[in-house]
Length: 417
Image (cartoon, rainbow, N blue to C red; front, side, top):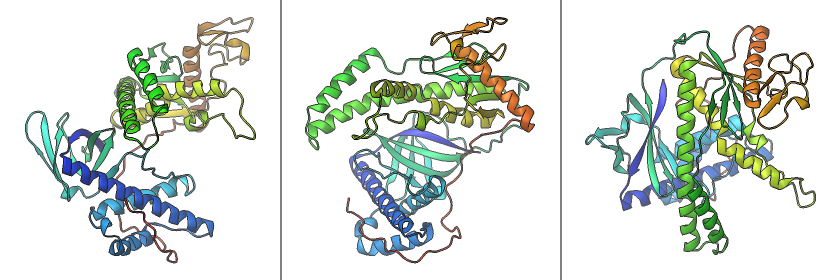
């Protein structure tokens, strides 16, 4: 199956500048292509990859800076845009801001990429027009290279290889009949139906204090100044470490859960909707904005969606089925008798059933996790089998897909980097 291998890359000054220019060109092509697609939608038409790729070739004759970067990186950008518009809709696809979007571009032809190992800790890869790029050999490739992606995080560059490791999803889990329900919370990241609590602090007290001081410094800097860029870089360095810890926690927890359970049940939570701002509009301001802002930060800090992605990725190697259920009343229902009432949950951590004949007392998160697991059983009895929401990494679509061609709408006005 297809999987990713990410390494820390070390570019020299010329390579870093050239990589920045490639990322800027891909960003300009993305924004121009998205603008063109939205103009088509306004007049009731539809634009796709094929005519945009032809117009990109014509735009290279007028804009010479487009010819300085690898052409298949620009074409891959249009393919990614086409896939995003088909999946999410043209109006939901976001612009790529120069200040907020980190440079990233992909080399889709794995046959043109050469990888050599220089020693126990170092390797190098030859990329089109960039040349040999040294990277830290932190793990073996373990398969045939299908594509390579260069991305920058803060001041650090990384190279990711999409490889085919020749592995296949097992038809049967090594521990059949095992199942677990997971309740994701803001106090504890994940609580299982068996009573296990999984959590860790992603930011230290010292990092939080330094980040607050940097926020104060940022508010006193002038927009566009070098001091502002320097402060933002220090803030990104702190948050980069926090993000890495969260990724590591979710990956380790996902591997632990999928290795021990044939079925993992989650709530079908819409994290993006749950973390939407409550500020409203100037004419109609929202209510309890500060409280909602604190809840949004707590949800995003625990990495609910990242854990779900890690579970579906790890399940491919163990044969685990990841099942999502309706989250309604899971925290208010008694896992022993099934009574649903708001008074059952006395506090954030305590659950006491108000039924006279029950009186079940348990940790609130464990009770919710057991309800999640039972809800999956009810769904199985209704539909006959567990639903599988396993994600499989796929290669980007090829450039020769047959799609209908719309009347030409000129791809003009590509801004210079």
